[in-house]
Amino acid sequence: MTQRIIVAVFITMSLVPLLSGYTYALLYSFGLTGLLNSEFTLHYWKSLFLQHQLLKHLWFSIYTAAISMLFSLIVAFYFAYQLLHQPRIWIIKSLLLPVFFAPISAAFIFNYLLSSTGIISRICFALGWINSYNDFPIFTQDKLGVGIIIPHIFLLFPLFSLLFYNIAKKENLMALKDLSLNLGASSKKFVFKIFIPILLKKTEPIILLYFIFFIGAYEIPLYLGTQSPQMLTVWIADLYRKFDLNSMGTAYAIIVLYASFVLVLLSIYLLKRKNKLLF
Amino acid sequence: MSKAIFYFFAILLWVPLFGLLYLSAIHQWSFPKLWGHSLFTFQHWKHIFGSEHQILEALQVSLVLGFFQMSITNIAGFLTSKFIMFHSKASILLSFSYYPFLITPLIFSFLLLYFFMQFNIAGSLFGVALVQFLLFYPFSVLLHASFWSKELKQLLFQATTLGATSYQVLIRLLLPMARPQLILGALICFLLSWFEYAVVHTIGMAKINTLTINTMIYFKEANPHLGAISALFLLLPYLFIILYFPKKSFQ
Image (cartoon, rainbow over all chains, first blue to last red):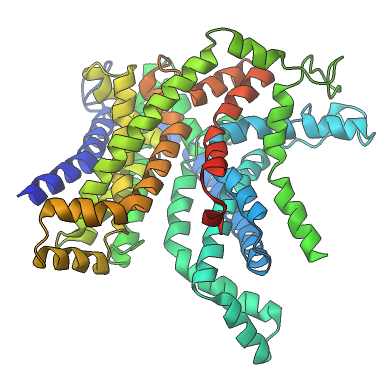
């Protein structure tokens, strides 16, 4: 009996807010509820697809998430491999520092580090490498999203380094390395044929979950992103918070699309793995 | 050589922290000067501790929200995970808990804002704590699910078979075994709430001032010094971890 009640509470807590919010957003986007709406309309959906903005922002989100992820993983493999050979406590403590960095603090300090009048630029000026702040390359609010990608890598790769390091220790990969070296493989071959594939296989679900989570990253793009192209979340927030009630409907339409995108992606993946994602 | 490169990268990790410390201790910071007429100053720090400053108020609000998540959400998640993992459809039930968090906090809060306004709890501390609870509780269940392994379940069955009452099982067996798990859960729930910006911003409606909100305000005001101090306060948990946990636990 207690079990039934608690399971029911759990299902209510985790699904009801989400589904009711989703239904409200869906109704709003079709003009069936909300302040200015009175009847069914496709106006918001039409304006969304006619603007040709959606794909641009979506691609930019996926692009920044993918690049941040890729570089974080590369650096994390390097760190985990080096840590296995030199397990120093101070390095582990250093790796913990970014884990405890709030995204907003990271965005704040990277803005003051990387901007053209920032700390690095001033050091370059003091050293005589540049003559004015115009000479410093633009890293923040740039078209390529470098300003978004660098803080993301800083925040993410230590987490993966520690994760990889722990798995490698548990799987006894050092012994496996000695074995493969004895059997005539080079260290390079060990890294690319054994070390990376084992770790990737073990952490594949976590990497995917982080990737989905990263597409929806908000604080850092808000600080360090451009106006165009924007990350999807920043764009949604802009539309949502405008004082124009017409854009509210469009915002709800994108929220519906985005939520469906995540729900479908995650459901497919969960079904494929028979719901056994992490355990 | 490879060792030197590795150490160099590890040292680079400290640059943002020193950047924040540097920004909090300088003044008259106009390009291209690296510091004002005196090298470092503590005037910003003195200014904050001298009066009832809004950063200190934000710190209190952040702590209240963090401790709420750390206790209520964490323990609720732990207890729920027990019943879920003993359920015959455990994996399906568990899969529900991915959705709220992965839909990202910002979208989640936009989905819920209307209902919070209807119930008149948007813009209140209770509302923010509640929305954070709704967001982190499923995640906390997921986090604790790995604790209920096959071996543990059998151990609990065995203890009951040998005549232990459910109270004894809880006090003598479960709580001592679950201690590290509960501490880890408490830490993660606290940090999730401590770092949260999007949800507090949306549901708090600019009335609830946490450290993250405060950092954003100073950023928009282009005030690097107070912003840096606010961002440094957000790093307090790291200091706590380094000082509190013994050396062995980092190995």
